[in-house]
Image (tube, rainbow, N blue to C red):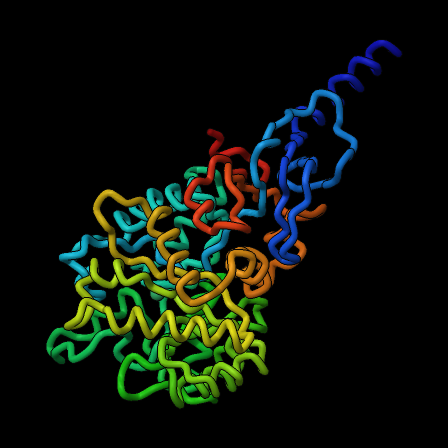
Length: 414
Ligand SMILES: [Zn+2]
């Protein structure tokens, strides 16, 4: 009997050890503090970090991962992406995509994109709509079940907007075909109903488009959405460019402004005072060019974005790294396209340590994940990446992610 108990005990200990991993980190970056600590060990059990330090106790039989020559940091986050959306440049028009790929193919397309961003080191994203009939919600469920590899996702489901979504001038006889991806909501009550409908169908974040047409959401309509979202414990993101529409969004209590390309200093000051995040989707010029954007290929807008990001940074607005990739550039993965945005942040004068914070701790705060994800500390999910060079010195080091762990599972190790 005693021998059996000992055997059982040893078996349990072996199982416990098998679930434990220890990473030897040569240089550990803490983006929230902007510091680097050398020769640290991270102990991971059941997908979570249980200890970090110079000599933490490593259970016998743990799997040891040697990153003693690398720079190790929390997984990166993208606060604005569309994983189930990706059209070749020549086809780029938001509405036309409905006629090219249905929901099923969009979900599978999203599975490919999800894997590509994860392998590039992006372990969490917010998928912000334009996902056909909740294809990104199903992609999120498939990732959560372990059927496909991808980042931890927030999904907003259908975009809520004043009549017409983001379409313009669709002839009346065609009908409101934008409802494939949008919910028309034109009073505070309709907005409330639309938020509830989205949550019912699986959204775990909410997105409005405030100003795609000449009419735009009032402060009361924004407030209705914010109240409904916050009551359900989730956040509200609002696409808006600037002006009175942006003022309504900030005063109405949105958690983040998406794009905000035309925000002036006064509105940025107001965002700072209210704690509103800027998810600026700070497009590189090359991506606008690929979209064949505007008469000048998006040159002026790309320059305006660099200026706006620089002003937002200097004023002290909370910045969330965000991309908004919707085209596919031949020969580039989604992960590589994501890293193209680093050039814009550098051009705007944001130093590497603050870019890293905008890609981790800030997004975790926007997502209301503090204490759960976004840092390497006990109790946090083990979302950990590594690069051979120091991204605190040169942000371009992020283009060479050699190790990715998500929820304690190694998904890439070179
Ligand atoms: Zn977008």
